[in-house]
Image (cartoon, rainbow, N blue to C red):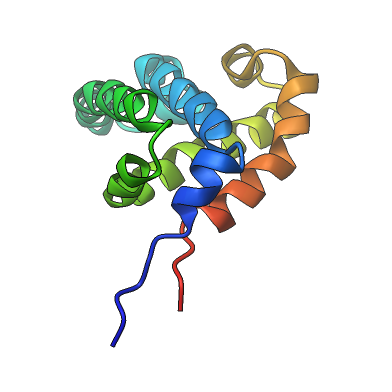
Amino acid sequence: MAEKVWTGAIFLKDGGGYEIVLKSLTHYRKRLRTIANSPELKDSAAMFASVLNQQAMKTVPKIDEVVKKIENSINDIQQVKALSDEVPFFEKALMCYESDIQKAQDTGHEYFVKLVGDMVEAKNDLPIIKNAIAKIKEYSE
């Protein structure tokens, strides 16, 4: 039986997927660094907030590591294929960015609007994010 090949690597390298993934990772880092200001966290119990904030700070170095991996491998498809282990992390960052854009649009809460930044650009990113979430986890049959 043939080994499945991560075709998401082609999307990441040649389909421009790395741009939205890097943008999402940058957003994810910003979100985690400001999580203490999140309206969702402010409504939760103090003990839970502390634990969540600690976990967020542990994740930030992982984001920096993954960003470097992408930047160092984007010109070589074989190196990009080695990023397949990071697909769940890519998905998490993409879904975080997507969710925060939607919260900014739906609630207009200052925290989410400031976090997302340019709302026109962010709104235009939504279909790109949806496509990336689908494409990034594709494998050959």
